Each structure stands twice: as C-alpha cells, then as structure tokens.
Image (cartoon, rainbow, N blue to C red; front, side, top):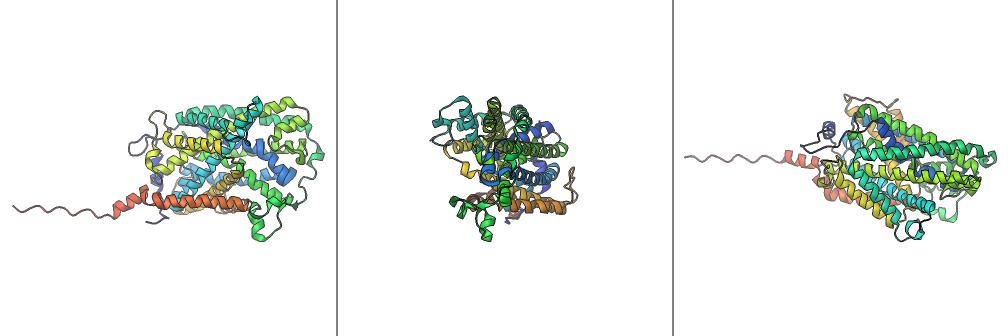
Length: 502
C-alpha cells in the first residue's frame, strides 16, 4: 500500500454532498460571502494588531514593521489566490489537507493535516491567554488567575475557550452571527485607531524608518537565531532589512487564519462563487487595516518606547488620550474572542475531514443530526485547547503557528499546477493568473519566510511532525478508507461451494 496514493476528486465531491455520505447526515450549507469574510476577518484581525505590532517594532524592525506587514500580506494574498482556485473547484472541509490528498498523496495530506491541527490549536490557546490578560486589565481581575505570568492555572483562558467551544458545537449559523458582531466592533475600532491616531503621528518617531542593523543580544544566538543566519554563518543581528524580514516571518502569524474560510466549503451555499470572494476579501481588508494601524502606532510613539503588552492602548495613553485607550482595550477583547471562535470552528472541520477519511478513528467524525456540526471532534479539540491555554505559557510557541501556516500555504501553491495537470477537465470558477509561475513564486516566498524563523522553532516543528509520523504509520496508513478499499479489491472472492451430487 503506497503512502503516495491519492484520493479521487469524485470521492471528495461526493463527501461534500449536502445529504452526506453513506446515508449519514452531512454538514449544512448555511453561509454566504459576508459570513465567510466575517469568519476570515474575525480570525485574521486579532493578535497581529493588538500584540505583534509592538513586539516586532521594538525588537526586530522599528518603524519598518509597516513593511513587514506589507510583505507578509502580499505573500498571504498570493497564497489566498491558490486557495481560491482549489476551494472553488473542490469545495470541501479540510482545505489544504484535502487538496494535498487529491494531488500529492496520502502521506503529504497527513503531514499537512497534522500541521494544521497544531497551527489552529496553538493559535487558539495563545490568543485565549492574551484575551484573559486584556480582560484582567479592563476590570482589575486578579493576576493569579488571569495573567500570562505568575499564574499556575489561567481560569480566564479556560473559561473563554469552553464557552466559545459550546457556540462552535451548537451550530455554524450561531457561530457566524457571533463572529459577525465581533468583527463589526473591531473593524470600527481599527478604523478609529487609524483616523484618530493620524492626528498624533510625529515625523521624528518614523526616523529612521528602518533602523541600522545591530548585533543581537546574547540570548538571540544559537538556536534562537533565524535559520538563514545559522545556515550562512552570519552574525546574529536585529533591525536593518534582515530585521524587517524576520519580523515579516513572525507577523505572518497574524494572517494565517484566512485558510479557515477554505475549511467551510461544505457549509457554503454557493461555494464556487462565494469562497473566492470570502478568501480574497478577507486578505485585502485585513492587509489594509494592518498596515494602517502599524503605521499609526510607530508614528505616535518612538519604537524603542513601545509597550509590548498593549502597544495600541499604551500609544494613546502616551499622547494623553486615555479614553481612546479604553476603547482599544474593548476592541481587543472583542477581536481576540472572534479569533478563538473561528480557530475552534476550523479545527473541528479539519479533524472532521481527517477522521472521515479514516486516518484517525472515524467514529469521532459523526455529525450531530440537529446542529449539523461535527460535535464529537469539536468537543475533543475544545477540551484540548482549554487545557493548553490554562496550564502552558505558550508565548514561546507562537512562532509554530507561523511555520505551520507557511508549510500549508507552500503545499497548497504546489497543488495548483499538479491538479491542473492531473485534472484539466475539472471546472475551475476561479483560476490563479500566470500559473504555474505565480504558484511556484508563492511556494518559494513561503519557504523563504519560514527560513527566517528561528532554529528553535524548526526543531519544535520537526518534533511535532515526528509524533505525527508515529500516529500515521501506527494507525492511519493501515486503517484509512483507501487502504480498506485496496485490501478489499486485492482479496480474492472465496470459491463457490460445490453443490453435492445426489
């Protein structure tokens, strides 16, 4: 049995049928383009604006963090074009996992599915801890139960994950309504930050726009340095254009969630039209907001004096606009809430797709007959994220979200020309322009950005992949649907029993 066997496209499309497969209830088609953009913006506009802007400006890029967000946004937009072609042609749960299964083979699909589970689980857990900290800051809650540091168990993070997990399990329509409300709040606040902040921008704070490169601190060498510096024996450094690229690789974390939209293909009313609109609309709006907000923040406060914990709110306090800082904190709570919710919804769909194919026990892929959601796998993922968020300080692991997403995007870009070659007859409502050149450039850009992450991040990522390999070869390779089908085809039918002669 080959690890490179592929899943037939007709099987993928049959599984996405509204009536389900083998008589079992399927996912409900209830979403339109506005809902998809709500989910996309709901997960993309969050941690990147409210945290990473300050961290990377102060430690890596200075005001050049604006360029970092632009670079990351362009790479994400290129990846979104590839996602849009595949999602409109093969609308299904599982997104990159399913695309890889149909084009590059089972082992590649497993790697990317395992990778996506890591990406969304850690992303949700990291954001849940940030949400808890903002809530404590707003209402003066005890740091022993809500802070990132100094707490044994973060009750705020556990509570918000469990609450939003219930929303994700009860129904996709309810999740969409909650997300759309939260998105309206934070987009309005982001627009306010840009407009109001422009009145406080000082040209002196933007000079030099890209600070001169300088040696990194003692703690930033060895496994802490980017892979590119380690490979070529370069002296570890920060700032300069190297710092801008390093920041771009890190803030890519902020864009990663848009692929959650592609996971909703089986729940979209008109996927061939609405999925490309949802994906591209999400990226365009989010990139504009990120660049605008980051420019205002580094223009209001000198990058060396930015508060890493709450950069936007502290910037307004620094210029005497405390009332604006309170609005920003409220938007942060709303923004991070929607990120957690969409992460949980996406994880449930990825786990559902993997279990439905039998790479993990298929019993956990059952769809609730009333709610129309994969409630078992969603509940398992919710509990796992709640435990991670409650007991593990995950700030050091946030880079894993970026490397996981970059790996997924790279494989999706490669899948576009492969599927065009294998299935030229497939209907493609949306096509990536200049294929295969643009998909290849997208894959190379994702690879280059991932090499600007630290050696330590790569080591952790490879350990997670090794664990996934043990699960695949120990269970999924032998037990999945394609393996059982091959076994049935290779097993000869028993010879008919001869009729006794009277």
